[in-house]
Length: 265
Image 1 (tube, rainbow, N blue to C red):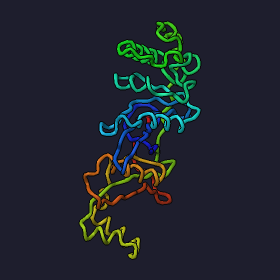
Image 2: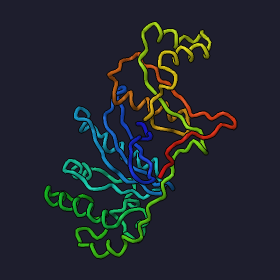
Image 3: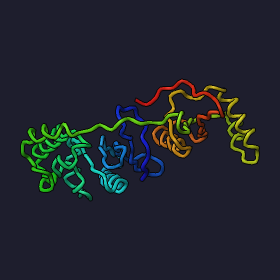
């Protein structure tokens, strides 16, 4: 199991995260979700298990991992497709008291749009009725009742968090790049007996000065930059085994003016 950042362009300040299940380096499944800046709310966007790994409990293990990673957060599990409602009917929610579908909106409305949650619940209830499933209805708040008026009353309580993001003016930024080097150069660059500066210079000569990717996902630590590349390796192993992972950072010299950049909005 791997809990990682998930680089995707979305509006707002919630942080995209991903739980991945890996089998021998191959992605078996994933849960994509968003986390509120204060860490006290999570919204599930999607859950998927690859066909060859289905019926092996991966979905339940990943959802358990999400709950463990955010042990005090409200969780919105969203609306479900047919396969999802069948899985949920079999799944035992480890934290039903933190599932917003199980609690009145007065408890969680500042984090989630009450109208949107009501629509999700109605969709799930319809799917349960369609397939003759229980869907843990005993735990769900006023299951099957029409709650439009209550949702309208609580919708104004929702407060979108102010967007905050990495800014080279106030913090160090790191990015990453995967490169496939010619075989001889690959051996030289990865030869630990050589001087680090010499190997770095060989890399720069190959890549080209000022040729680093303009669309790299920015991170505030070098570890997170390498983690981005490891995720790419799982999703796209077509480059082969001889791949070099390169981390770089924005480094302003003492007294240097900050270059023009887009501030997070």
